[in-house]
Length: 226
Image (cartoon, rainbow, N blue to C red; front, top):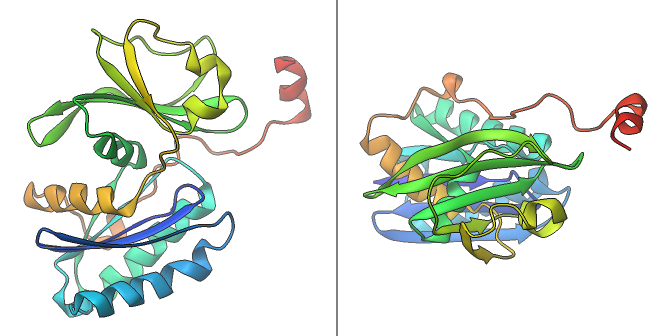
């Protein structure tokens, strides 16, 4: 299966083409240039792969949670190409992409959600696929979910930027992977599996996963948290 995937939910702008078992990737770290960088990346990947849009079986994108603008860029770009080529789309949670990158059997994923909160989820391997242990959500200090058992690997920017998250689940988290951001390569692999399981959708049904509808606290909310 030939899948074009994009992931722009963080400062990492990432695109990939999975051509059979071969993965081709273009990436760049940029805070505010995803809309400028993404299409040239895709064009280079299409040229390298020799596929062209017609040679793709479908598209996948990291649907978030993460940066609102980045998520919208990924969704809009993939929807546009899918509409034009009459192909389907696999919407892949960005937290699940990080779990896939960890290459472990039990993975706890946390991204910095700003406002002293974290986007968090937990997944366990189920063969080649993943079982959701904690569904993606927004969590604050003192309101974290419980984890079953031990042997968890932690990954994501939340563990690097939120001190109160680093000390959570003592005795259950064995290892923390630093510096990881969701990548299009993992989105492409997960997207191919989603297509194989019949989980891809028409482009108009592909939607971002925001988890919340605001990016900053009001003055009153900041005072209440002080």
